[in-house]
Image (cartoon, rainbow, N blue to C red; front, side, top):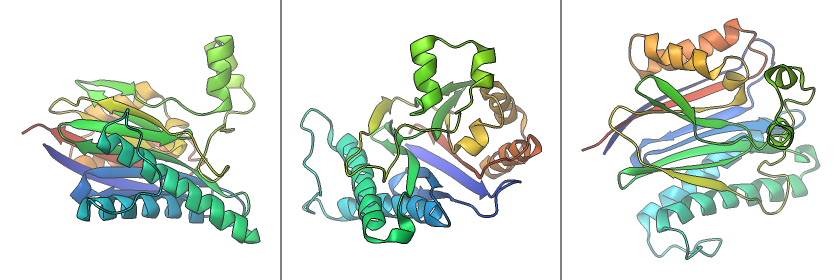
Length: 255
């Protein structure tokens, strides 16, 4: 298994500072995007804390099989899937406890998406409305399901495209790290094919350009993964850039 990757983040055209964070932990084939929220700079604190905590947990558990885990493993899940879930839960707890101790950080939180390539597969974990897509043979497929008020309404009421466009609370998320002492983590398992590209992004990208447009950009942009990341961000900014924009692309090749 070989995974090549690139990542970029940009403040966008409307925001004063960037509350997104990303981590390309290539030694572990672990890729993370977080989109922070909260007053002042606390969103940035939460997103950075989440990616750093998760990466540190993966580093510790890779180096020492006997390291004590902060949560019990779910025996119904595989070891590496438990690793993803536990790392995200640990990130949630650290953010929640930090916000509880420091009044300046009260209310901070972050979304989080993770792609972890291992043993010929890929575990995708997420909380919030940042997304993971799979780009295969020219087709872009969303792997994650948004934990958002809009998505809840779509599932309950089967909204039309016009109703979705006019929905007044598009940015309201119903699940995030740091909001509660515990968090439910959604995890799925992918079986990648050679040539697949996995796209991780904050809603600064997915909220600005359609999935179809993203697919065209991935197909048409010449150059390496870095250039494709840059082009996605450029177009999101051309469409308004109303939020911070973060993109990671991970290209999979089987042995």
